[in-house]
Length: 70
Ligand SMILES: [Zn+2]
Image 1 (cartoon, rainbow, N blue to C red):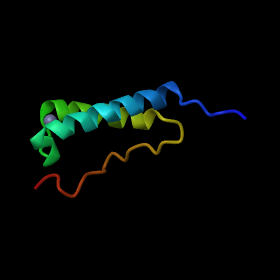
Image 2: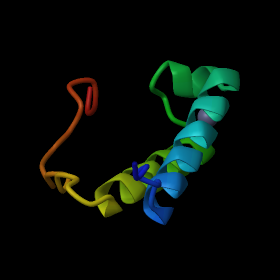
Image 3: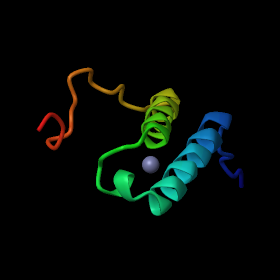
């Protein structure tokens, strides 16, 4: 039996994701999707790690959340 070890990218993505969740947990603006500078940085870092994962779908440049821009 060979266990599939997480790649470095996967580990990093996981850590960034935890950082993101931990920050959001203690940050009211971020929870309300009014991202503070730290939250915005974590979000883009998280996106970057996710797009670095093998098999990840590259983020569409035009993708935007329905709540943005209002
Ligand atoms: Zn925040």
